[in-house]
Length: 322
Image 1 (tube, rainbow, N blue to C red):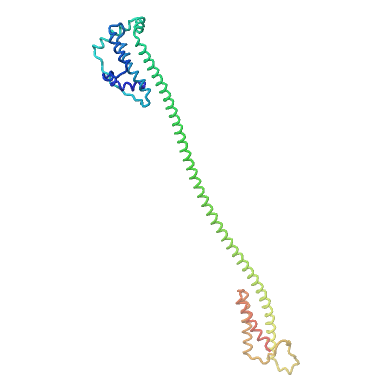
Image 2 (image 1 turned 60 degrees about the vertical axis):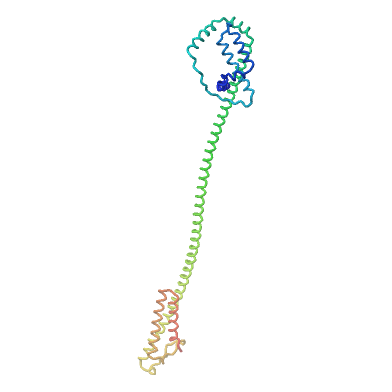
């Protein structure tokens, strides 16, 4: 069909008398035969159609042999026949249809060029069949290419979908990595805070142990001071008894009237030569010592303890004075 369309495109060239003059010898021979047998009983319309087909078939054969032949088709304009030509052709066609088959065979046997026309017609049919087969093959190839193209499109779409999924998974992975990094930083900060808390706790424990040791030392010092206070109270009681005895001795008659030996202890000094001012100073030292002992017992610090010790030494300096 494509060859026939290409041939129709060049129909105007076939109608040119100049082209007809340059056509094949077969065409001239058929033309002469048609002029010589004008009075024959053949169907002239059919014969004329066959004569017009011959150059088309010849051109088709020549073009098919050429490697530069390109397929193209176009629609050509055919002149509308007049009414007179139609009225002339209709009886001839009816006559051709009423012609017996035997007469047609005889006319074909009488015309040797009819075989060549039929051979060309068969060649044209074969060429058209080949073209149809080639067209079918091309159609199959086109369908195969379209199918492959669709498959490639599907593969491309699936690859795009896979690419998008991979991108989404990578984005989720990056987000998880970022969250893991944040959690790691939080864990490190918590570990640092825990280490600082442990250090502070150790410091507080050390301070507590120090306070406990100081409290224990203070308790021991307090117990020691309590013992010293009890001892001083005993000494003071002894001194007071001595003072009372001295006062009684001064208020009694002379010692010569009585045979009384002084009730003194050998370790006590003689206080016969003491005056009133020394007695007052010793009494003040005693009161100061008692006050220092009471303050040291209440406060329980080194300063108060040292003050109590100094007051004791000051009092002992009066008592043990020789």
